Picture 1 (spheres, one colour):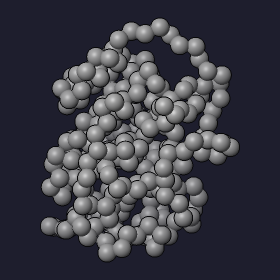
Picture 2: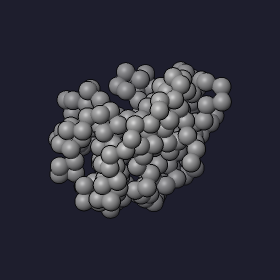
Picture 3: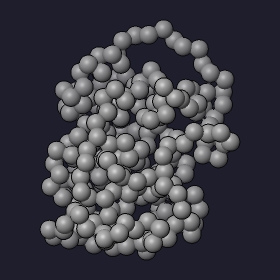
Length: 244
């Protein structure tokens, strides 16, 4: 298995978690006719908490774009032939009624809120700006700013799939997202918080074998030399991403 090193910790190249908490054994994928693109801030690529990476792992044929600077991306570079580009944004117009998923390409902006806001200033000019009707509390327990009706990229995608009638795909992504949150909480040493999160989560019933293995006590491994790998580091291994 290939690995990356972030902050002195060896991590899985796919899920970004320390190998002790890797969840790839439970990976699910879904195929839908809707085109999904994630425009991710460059700093988000190596954050284990990134829910945009969950979307790119689970939704087949989704594309991951990396935003590094203003003016880097233009609408024509992103547009898929025969599809109308929708940019998902909280202040967009209501979702159109009865759209055909085969004719739609949805762009989701991904990063912490300050980073996403920078990308959104450009993204709002890439296509039709729409908003999803989302209510309730976010289950993204990994970032403090998930308050006041704010939701993660993965949660927005779950609602998007449901809106188009892809309920089974939405539930599969929900299971993967909740497993992702649980494993990240455990990797941070927040066992009680993680167990609280798991109560009532669909991941508890979906992945009993993996959860049991994750809870097996293991001897402490020696820490790797403190070295940080990011998207600008020579020789860094990056997740697949589209390029201009």
